[in-house]
Every structure is written in C-alpha cells, then in structure tokens.
Image 1 (tube, rainbow over the protein chains, first blue to last red):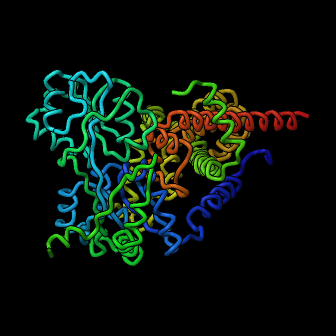
Image 2 (cartoon, rainbow over the protein chains, first blue to last red):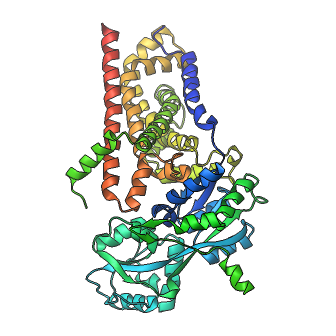
Image 3 (cartoon, one colour):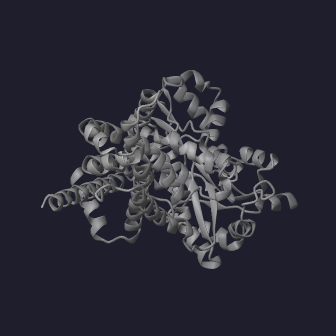
Length: 285
Length: 235
C-alpha cells in the first residue's frame, strides 16, 4: 500500500503549496500607495517619467491601476486605492460631494483632438470647431469609434455630441461604433476601420499604430482636458494611507511635481501642462 | 504593422538582452499560474476522483455543473474575486486586492472546475477497470480515491497541464484583481494587453511569442518528467 498517496501526503503537499504563496504576501516592501488613474496618464509614459522622481525623494512606491475614469472613481469609492488621479471634473466633484474623497485639486491639463482617416469623408480636416466637425461626421454618416466605457474621454465626447445636436444613441451600431474599451484599443479599432475618434493628445502622440489616421480637429478651446487629484476619504475607508497619499498629492501640486510633469516630453513635444493652484490664483486675483 | 520576421527577431532580441523587467514579468506569470494550478490540483483531483467513485443522488447534476464551469468566463471570475476582496467587500480587511495572491485566488477558481472535470472523466474510466479489485481488497473510500489518483497520475498530469494552459493564457481575471501594476502584478498577458493598447503591436506580438514558447517549455518539462518516471517505475 506504500505506493498509494496517503492523506498525509496530500496534507504535506498542501503545506508546500501554502509555503509557495506565503512569500507573496509576506514580502518586505517599501511603503506604497495605490493610485487609481486613467489609461492616458499611463499609456503616454507620464507615470514612468515622474514616479521614479517621487520615489527617489520620499521612498514611497506608487502603484498605478490604470483604468477608465468611470471605473477608477468606482474603485476609489470602494476604498480600493489611496489617491484618485483622473480627468472628468464634474464626476470628480460629485465623488467628493458624496464623501468618497477629501478635496479635489487641479493638477495639469492637455487637450483632446479628433483624429480621422486621411481620405477625410466628412471634409473636416484642419478645422477648429469640434461641434461643427462632429455634425459633419453625423451628416455623412462617416464611421466614428467611441470609447463607450464611461471614461473621462467618453464623457467629454458625449458633451461634444450634445453640443453638436447629434443623437448618437440612434446611430449606435450604424456609423457610430461604441467599442466599450480603452483609448488605445479604440484607436486600434479606428485605425482598422478608417473611423474618426476623439482622443486625448498624450495618448495619440504616444500611440504607435496610427495607420492611416491623422489629427483633423485641434485647438478648439472646448477640447480642454483637465486632470484632477483627490485623496480617498480616510473617514470612509480606514485603510487609506493618509500620510503617504497626501505626500504624493503635495508633491504633485508643488514645484517639484509640476516641473516633473512639465519636463515630460515625447518626440520633442510636451504632453501635459501643469496648472496646480491656478484656479485659486484666479479667484484671488 | 511589422512583418512576422521582425516580430520574431524582436522576441528573440528581448529574450537575449536579458531584460530584467521582462524576466520578472515571466517569473511572476509562472509563479501565479503554477501556484494556482497546484492549488487547483489539490482541490480538483480528489474532487474529480470522489465524483467518479462515490454514487449519491444528484451526482449527475454536480457533474453537469462542473463541466459547465470548465467554461467560466475569466472576466466574471475576476469580477467576483474583486467584489470579494475589495475594501468594501466581505474579505476587504485582508488587503489582498492588487496583489499576486489575489491573482492566484482568481486563477485557482478559474481552473479548479476544469481540472476536476477532466480528472473525474479519467478516474471514472479507471475505476471501471479497478472496481472489483478494490472491492476484493476492501479499500475504504479515501484509500480508493488515493489509489485511483496515484494510478492515473500520468493522465491526470494532462488535466493539470490543461489547467495551466488556461491559467497562463487568461487576462480577464488577473487584470481586474491584479490591476496590471508595474513591478507588482504585471504578468505576460496583461503586459500584452497594455502594449496592444499603446498601439505597439510588434512588441505585443513578440511578448505573445515568448508566452507561447514558455507554455511549450512547461509542457515539454512535464512530458519528460512523466516519461522518466514511467521508465523508472517499470525498470
């Protein structure tokens, strides 16, 4: 009977397996915080540029979960993060008002652009009016790829369609294609089907599968894209690392963080423009 | 898009460069998926053998359920584990979300039904063969199950490999519960998803090629191990 695996052997196997997992949880780690953020900040490479500087100064490791703004806010509302860094001001203010976050601060901005195929079926290239351009796209029923994922970019896109007076719900599945995925995946789709799309400029510049797509609309002041940062409310979620999280926010909003953001370039272009505290200054002035 | 030749050379270049980041991602992929498969075997093999040996009312229903769960959508498992481990969830106090442990839990749930269902099938076949012998020896149920698992170990290793294949290849569950955090929870599949979303399709494909090669290595290793064990057993 020796050949048979006895229950004892099973138990010892289980012990071995548990020992294999144990180091995963018991690893000696640097202090860290979890930041719920958006794909644009990660995919563009901004975090890879600025986080090492913060780590060097404070020793705090910043773990970024990059999802759409809608999901990031939900995750933060569940307490699954210490800091929220996203770009949908109205939704952020609602999050703070509902007690999910402590206070919202402007961090930086860039802008959205509309990209489209070189053939430009809607004849909108080199325009400056986003709403008029979207109206033209709807008029000729040119394919348009939307995030459709409740992200900051998707929220902005819906605002612009509203301004253009176009009911996209009706067109969904026809010329309006809601991908329900991240910015990069949506750009891949747009490149594949020769569709127009709204994207933040940082993701666009960093994106490597542009194919036939090019910028057709830029420079409309309405295409402004503001990023904000919020500490998740420790009164609601006891696990929030207030000291480390606040240290990260203070650094981002201070001279060092703002300079770090300013110094991030891709192809010789600055992708994000720091503007912390300017709102307050405007108020004071 | 780059042609397949350049993707191949990119993959080879990545491996040969000894890129520390790539190797840590590979190591984490293996650690998570192999641990999940080991745990799934500990649960799934006895469960499969039990279902093969013991007759009880409703067994067919349990087996049908188990077989259906072979096709559990990873993203649903991910969501389920997220809701359980979230700070607002029942297990939130453990602080396991966005750690490799969370990924192991998700993949264990994902592959246990697969391993159990495959084990049940091969154990049932084996049991038909051995039933009389076991009866004559008067073996207890737990002894019977242990004997079946031991005697069917070579075919069970195929079940384990199927589980490993499902675990190492899935992205839906680990990206939700792991968060694809650089240096912490980024594995091969989530890295591929990330590079795809950056539009770096060549790098994504190269990583995919490395992942497939990795799976090939693990499968060959198990095959060789099996063969050696067999040779020793019958020598």
